[in-house]
View 1 (cartoon, rainbow over the protein chains, first blue to last red):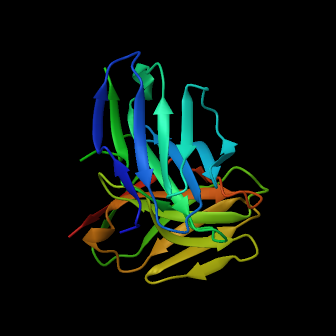
View 2: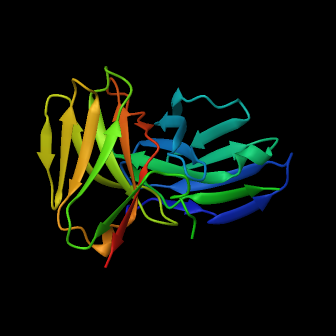
Length: 112
Length: 112
């Protein structure tokens, strides 16, 4: 167990809708990163938050946005869903001063 | 569960054999490398890491070798067990920002 939880486990949406995915990490893990993992591929970095501020962003459009809260929870929001957004969405947290990322089990998003 | 092994390079071994999984990384400035194991339906799990000032690091049943000259990383698993069956990813990181870039992954299948 990594201490990182994600909800929901699975989600089905239709094209054009909006979705919010949630992540909860351990106390003291002030850095959280979100990844998109397409089937058969490695995780692709979306963005990272440190102490509630965006700390880095991958090659994803602005319709992917995030929030981090003081209670070590975070959200990934995706607007105007497209079919290609269907993937496993992973969050990973890191304890301040450490390098190891601890991943949650992921949310499987299907866009129809 | 999901089949993250689709279209991935595959290594098949017999239980008890030693396994070697290889990874070529892309950025010569990368200074921190991590191996992850991802079982079906789960998020990536940290296995072992190595920094660029080392060429070998050992853990429990696992060894990581780093060859910076040819930008190559390998993961050796001793006495492979059926529970080792999973997809293995290498990830590289540059400059302490901790935004790792994941490789495509290798599917390890262990036959009893």
